Amino acid sequence: MSVRRLAEKQPPSFAFSPDNLEWAKLQIAKYPQGRQQSAVIPLLWRAQEQAGGWLPQKAIEAVADLLGMAKIRVLEVATFYTMFNLSPVGRFHVQFCGTTPCMLRGADGLKKVLERVIGHENEVTADGTFSWTEVECLGACVNAPMVQINADYYEDLTPEILTRLINDLASGRVVRPGPQVDRHLSAPIGGETTLTDPAIYAPRAEAATVQESAPNPPAAGATDPRGG
Image 1 (tube, rainbow, N blue to C red):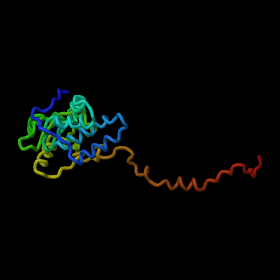
Image 2 (cartoon, one colour):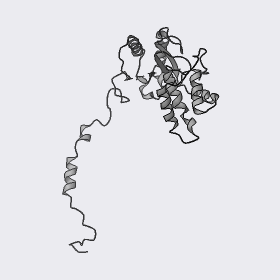
Image 3 (spheres, rainbow, N blue to C red):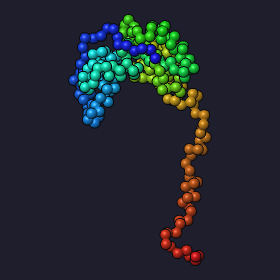
Image 4 (cartoon, one colour):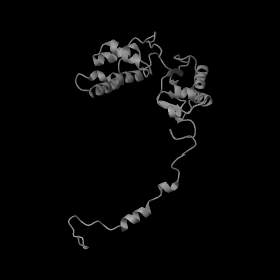
């Protein structure tokens, strides 16, 4: 993993909005006395959302002040997790999965599309629309290769499909997240291949009939009419 540093250009200040501050206090209250610092990750996430998708230094310091933590401790958290962006991102921020399963399924072709259509990694396009970064596994290996754009996953990609998605987003067209081929979620491509016999799912009427016709066992303590 490359070294993660704060952006050189920083806004002069940051303060939680009234709604977000109220939300933050509710998160802190979920933890027992003395453990409120455990809320650092959700608070950083909300600060990132408020700041437009990235964490300015002043936002990190605001979270530290709210939790009574040393600023360096919160900075350690922010720089460790790649879910936190330390520099400005585009309106559509693409997280490109470059881990082995995606690479085996052609992710290198997707990376070339991002470099050609958007530009250099961790740079925002001139109009502020796009940015991209390479990340570790996003947990959708069965649908590789894939990317995450803002909060949504786009899976089973090809360079052509990814190019179309980017063009549609740039044009304001609605795009469909999830698998981009004819499959439902992580179901097999081409449809079901096992347990396809309709008889498996047919009502078990015959079994029910046999069960109903079976004699009831004698009650506890009853005498067997045959003796014994």
